[in-house]
Structures are given as C-alpha cells and as structure tokens.
Amino acid sequence: MKTNRRNFLRTAAVAGAGTITASAVTACSRSAKKEEAMAVVREAAETVHTQRFNMSGYAAPPLDKVRVGLIGLGMRGPGAVERMAHIEGVEIAGLCDKYHDRVDKIQVLLSRFGLPQARSFSGSGEAWKGLCDDPDIDLVYICTPWEWHTPMATYAMEAGKHVALEVPAAKTVDECWQLVEVSERTRKHCMQLENCCYDFFELLTLNMARQGLFGDIVHGEGAYIHDLRWDWTYDKNGYADMWRLKENVRNGNLYPTHGLGPICQIMNINRGDRMDYLTSLSSNDFVMGKDLEQLAGEDPFYAPYAGKAYRGNMNTTLVKTNLGRSIMIQHDVSSPRPYSRIHLLSGTKGFAQKYPSPARIALGHTWMSPQDQKALEEQYTPEIVKRVGEMARAIGGHGGMDFIMDWRLIDCLRNGLPLDQDVYDAALWSVITPLSEWSVANRSASINIPDFTCGSWKNNTPFDPNLATGGNTKVLKLHATEVQLEV
Image 1: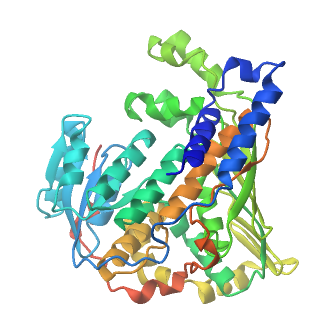
Image 2: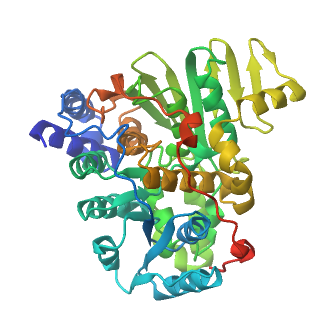
C-alpha cells in the first residue's frame, strides 16, 4: 500500500472519529489546521492505485454444497440460520458466539429442523478464529458488532473462505481498503449483506430502470429513519454491552447502506458511474443526551452513558457522481418519526417513491392510478422475485428480502455466478460513514470519495435482476418453518 494513501486513511479516520485535537478546533488555529488536513485528504484521495484483480463480475469456482459457518448469534444470526435451513445445497457447518448459551439454542433449532449438529465455537473472544480456520467451511457469515466486521472478514478470506458480513462492512476508510485488497489478492468474495437491495419495490424499480421507464436517472434519495431508542437504550439486553448505543458518539451518517445500496444499483455506481465527492451536515442532538441523563438519574446502570456528546439526531449527506447525478442519504434513529428508507428515484421520464406507503410511481407528470400501477408492477416484476418471492414472503426476514438475499448468495456460489454485490460495493457504501464524519467535523466541507474499483467502474457490467434465473438452487419446504426460536 502506498505511503500517501496510508496517510490519507489515517487523516480521514482521525477526523472522522471526532478526535481532532483541541488546537485544531479552537478559533485561532482551526482554519489553518483544517485546510492542511483537507489538502492531505484530497491529494491522497485522488492518487491512482493499482488493482490486483477485478472482483466485479468475478465468478468463483462453483460449490455443489455451501458449508456455512456463522459468527454472532445474538440479534441477526439466529434468523440467518433459520433462512439458510430452507435453501437447497446448504450445510450449517459451524456456529460461533462467545456466549455458550447462544450456540446451544441454535443447536436445538437445527435438531428441530431435522438437521445435524454444527461444530461449535464459543467461550472466548477469539473463538471465531477457529471457525474461520476450519477447512470444512466455505462461507463465513458474520453477524457481530460493527468493530469486528472487517477483522473477521479479512481473517476469513486469508483462511480461504468466502465472506458475507452484516452492514456496515467497515468503520474506517482504512478498513474499506483492507477488504478490497484482501478480496482481490485471495480472490474470495466479500459480500455486504445489504438486504434492502432485495426488497420487492427496490427490485421492481431496478428492473424498471433497466428497461428505461424512468429515462436517465437524475437524482436519488435513500434513508434510514427508524426510532431505535428502545432497542439500544431502554432495553438493557438488546445489544451485548450496549455496543450499539456506544457507536452513537460518532457524529455522521452511521448507517447509510440501507437507503444507499438500492439507489447505487439503479444508478450503476461502480458499474458505469462512480461517486465523486460528498458533503454532510448533522443537526444537534436534542434527544439522546437528555434521555440518558434522565435514565441515569433513575438507574445507576446508565451512569456511564450519561454526560456524553451523542451524534446529531438527523444527518443529511449529499453525493455528486462522476456523471453529474445527485444522491441524498439521511440517517435518524433517535427521533419519534415513522419508519422510512425514502427510496426515491427521479428520472427524465418518470419518478418513484416508496415511503410514505403506499409506494407511488409517476410516468411523465402524472401519478399512476392504483390499478395502472398494479398492472405495471406485474409487467416488470423481475425474474428473481418470480422465482422465489412467494416463498420468501412465507419464510420471512424483514418481509422476505432477507431470504431473497440469502437464496441469491447461495445460488451464485453453487453455480459459479458473479455476486450482485461485490467487495467494491461493500467498501463504497460503508465509506460514507467515516467521510460524513469528517465533513460534519469540518463545517460540511466536501470531501472526495475514493474509487475502490481503481478505474474499472468504466467497464464493469451492471447487475440485472432478470439474470437471476441462471441458477438452479431450490427452496426447501420444510415442516420446521413453523418452529419459533426463542432467543
């Protein structure tokens, strides 16, 4: 890795983490320090890097059976196990969590499904390495706290495993580059589990865009607006050691990928266009700090979390692409607002917006009637939804999109197909967080976005949801679908 890029990574990581020195943010020297740091960042971000191997469009050798090892059996892992149990050609080969009881509960689930016991890895913070080193595992599926995503993913790829990891894939710019470089060197897939790319309306609008119904896409909007205070503040057992709450001392867009991923696919980002630069602004925190001060006064458990500066309630990040398109991404998880990912597309011929429901489509200047829109949806439902959509809704996982995502991943691995989301997508969608932190800390100054494809975006092939018929993996209709797991 070149020295100037390493300097860039360190500079962006430090500024993004909000650990700028006091002298750099005082009135007398702030401007000079900020301009110097920005100059280093911009110069390094524009440096040309050499791509070892292009992972976009790469088809790994097919696996007749995909032996899956799952790390992290708290919030997301159990659901992944249950979904994988319904997919032909999957063996749940390994289960890992530092807490013994979580592994034991999933072993019980496998027994209820009539499946053999998986190898257990638990009891320490390093148990996951044993799972990654297991020669009888092909795919490592990571559902842990964010800080472990990149270390586990890079270790697993070095051990010869493909990787699927929860969002965000990385926390720092440096980690984003680590994922790219290890994936290219080992030629192992690294897919971020961005399930919202597989939700039904998102896939529909992707197919419509591919067929030209919206014309040239001019602008897109995505968001993660979801009041999660109960999950990570009031519920003491929701996240181990309150790790999700602790992440919110970082001030930026901490969870951009749900709203951003589907927009990037529609705009062919990394596959015909690329992100150029961003600017980001956060409101002050009007909620979290006050909530925790009040809770600390009632319960000493919350004392360590009171008196801290938490992220602003609403972050708005704006992106300009190389072809001149614009993207808005918002993040608010602490205000009493209805759930929304927005998912807005504005083109030269049409418009679509998912939230607030019901989703609406306009062709030209006129909203379609419900009857006409239904007919249009039936006409442009992509093949992947026709193939597994009905079963996905029955099995579940955020309404079925989790299952479509898992089925598609396994089908690609079994049939030697390129993945819909590659390591460049994982790095790019995740890097928005540290860059947005840097911009917020620098009065919303713009910052260049690294090109993780190293120029190959100009020739990479866009994902087409109608190519998903290339595989032959079946959905298994197990009697165990009615089993409810208590965790």
